Every structure is written in structure tokens, then in C-alpha cells.
Length: 469
Image 1 (cartoon, rainbow, N blue to C red):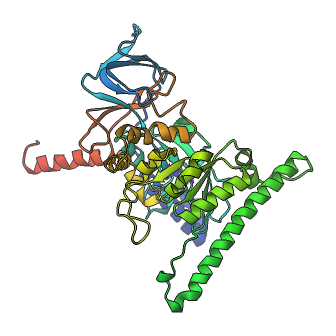
Image 2: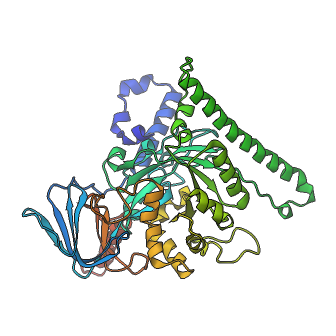
């Protein structure tokens, strides 16, 4: 798909002689293909990625929110070759450094969207721009990174609000269960290779739904309810059979008995070895209980994604060091009769219980354009009991730790990527403006499709008023 998107329309235009020889079916297929290329290119971002940092950069005068080591008022940051090399009240400024005065401003590390399809989905109604799920139920070999579209219009829209990295997660199709491997990308670059922070983060599994409310199925629909339960159990068995097959494959390969390479089970070997986590998407108690038992049975490094009912398992999660990726604070309660603020207080409850967590969003393809609202999810959690410092960590340092990239992202520390932004206030407040963004020390263009349209139609207004010749 990405190769198709990168081709130009002219490259698909045959000569008149060739057109004359083509069958009607071939022409129809060519027209569909050309339309797909054009529709995909129509949603390409106009932002030009910045070149690699060549001279040292110093940001001075701002309050530096390191996240991991407190605040530094009127501080200075030295950035060289894309990484932070010094930080403090004063730093040794190289003679050839570019010094940017940001007095009175605030500097924060870039936020991380830990559950999204950014780069994999653009417009729901344009199929060529949706590449976030594979067909079939068992796809451990699917890799999100090779499908990431660096020209997505959603990328500049997201980073303009301080979200500078995203975990692109393969989603479940209609029958999906083992969805594939997620990838962490920074939101700037010419290609997916340029954007890659970690190509393969973890294997994602959609736990089958296990809670069925009989009240929703009146007597004539009893058979349908039973069918749904039966289908759920069949999916559970399919999941366990897949892992059993992967284990048998691993053992056979270790014995060098001539077993042929199977790309599906090959992709699961790092998971079975505990080198790569399994992200099990589970919301209610039955799913979470199953995920915990499943991970224990197969000795997996588990991360719960969703986790509305995780406070019920706080002791187990804490004891086993299982982190939770909360998929959104702006949500309704899960059940009738539940407290209205069930989702709003989830982060606070996990924090008080000592369970590792981070705050993300729902990750649906129809919500990718709203990833810029990530800091406001954390803000609502603050309003319902979460400590403000914990809320900031929940969208910066904690996701970096859970995703295994805390040595690169999540806080402002020497040695880490210089992925940070300059703002005029707290990013969790809607009135705050992000004024400058740097990714690996590169100044990033803050224009978006929305800002360009604003400028365009401002000109129309001025022209109608006769204020522009």
C-alpha cells in the first residue's frame, strides 16, 4: 500500500497504443488504482521535515520542567546532534552555538500517545488511507512500522499540541485477535525509517468479550445470546491454540529438526522469550482476569490496555508489576448504575494503589485526529484526584517507561533525545499555546492544514472588505 501511495499518477499513465490493447477489465482496474493513488496523495501533509541538527542549540531563560528531576527556573538546555548534552541554571555554551532566548516561557518534554493509529489511518471514507488492520484473526507477523505514512495530515495536527511521539498500534479487524506488533515513532521525518524510535514494541492481542448481559436479550433472543457466548469461547480457544502452536514451533526449531520457517510463529519468539511485552486489550473484569491468567500460563511480559476494571485487581497488578495503559479519561461508565466518574477517577485509583500506568486515548481509527487532546485527558484526571505532577508523568515519562524507551524519551535529561516543546503555560490547560517544537533538536514547522485554511479564508474576508488590493 505504501509503495502505491508513493507513486505518482503520471507513472501509472500508459501510452495510447497500450491503452488500445488493454481489456475493459484491465482499464477498470487501472482506473481504480489511479484513483486510489490520487485520493491518498490528496491527504498528504505539506509540512517539510527539518534537516538534522548541525550546530549546537541552547534554549535559555525558560522554566524547565524536567519531569524526572523537578523544575529549573530560568534554566538553560544545550542540545547537540539531536540529544540533550547539558541542562541546568547555566551551561557551557559552545562558541558556534545558536542561542534562543525563551525567557518567561516553559519547556516540557514531548508527550507520548501510547495507543493510537496515527500514521496508519487518515480518512475513514477513503479506503486507501486506512491501513491499520489485517484480515483474519491470527496476525502476529503484522508490523505497524512498515505501514506508517509520514505524510499524514494528522501528524502536524497532533504535534502542534505537544504530542511528539506515538505508538502506532495494529488494530483488530472484524475477526481480529492477535493483531500484530506496534511501533513507536516520533512525529517528524521524511520516511518511516526516519521516524522510528523503536520498530517493534510489543505484540497486541484483543481479548474476546466475555460479559453478556441477559437483560439486553429478551426471551426470543436467548439463542442469540448463547451463540455469542459460544463464539467467545471459540475465540479464546483459537488464541490459546495459536500460542501452543508457537511454543511447539519454538521447540522444534531449537531441536533443529528441519521445521520450515513460519513467519507467524517466528514473530512470536521474542514474546515467548520475555524479550517483548504482550499488550492485551481488556476493559472489564472478566477480560482482565483472563489476561492475567493467560500471561501467567505462558510466562508473558504483560501490559493491560484499557483497564476500566483494573482497580479490582490492583494488588495482583502491583505484585506482578503489570502496567496499565488507560485508553481515555473522557468516557462514559462501563455499566448501568456505575458512578458517572468511573473513567475520570481511574488514573487516581491506580496511582493511589501503586499500580504503574499511563494515560492514552481510545486508539480507534475514527479518533486519530483527536490525539492532540491527550494533555486534556490528563487534566480531567487531575480534576478527579490525580496529582498534577503524576498527570504530567502519565503522558510523558510513564508511557516511555512502559514502552521501554525511557532512555530516549519521556523527560528532559542529559543523553535523551531533544524532543521537547516551548509553551507559554501548562500544556494541560486549553488556553496554553505551544510556541516552538523541537524533535531531536530540529525546529519543527507548526503549520497545519487547519492553520493554512484559516490563513486562506482570512484573505477571502479581507478581499471582500476591500482591504487587500
